[in-house]
Length: 138
Ligand code: THU
Image 1 (cartoon, rainbow, N blue to C red):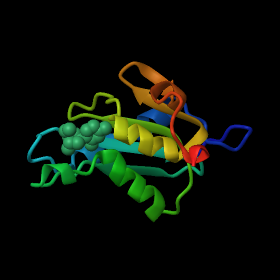
Image 2: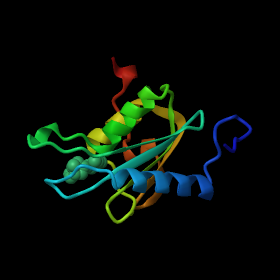
Image 3: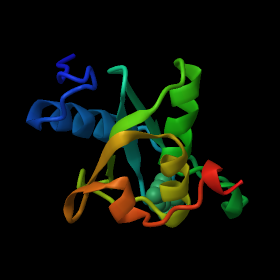
Image 4: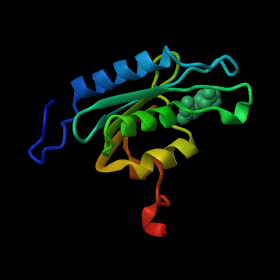
């Protein structure tokens, strides 16, 4: 893992490529027989782990788990921590903007410098979910 002077992982082209590959690998394992819309999500944690998840649909459509939900499950199953960089892809491997619910989910576990790869390029969590509701509101 490459680290910056503040010990957070560096996020350069090699790291984005590793995340893209992890997201594509997860997307290929998606269970999406109803929508046929496969999604893969991957993130780099502040301590340098790469976690991933795919969407898992259900015959009771509303029970569907987004790729990001399963990725957050892996975040905690592998030790918790904060997200530092995030990449979500569709079946074509193209960056996908997380749905609103998943932006909220990502926001809860963001690190202070978290960035996302989006169809519009690299954006901060604040840009994709401004004025987010969070623990500070409770
Ligand atoms: N989906 C995700 O996995 N993440 C998103 O951010 C957007 C939507 C999934 C849910 C469903 O299985 C399929 O994409 C179509 O909505």
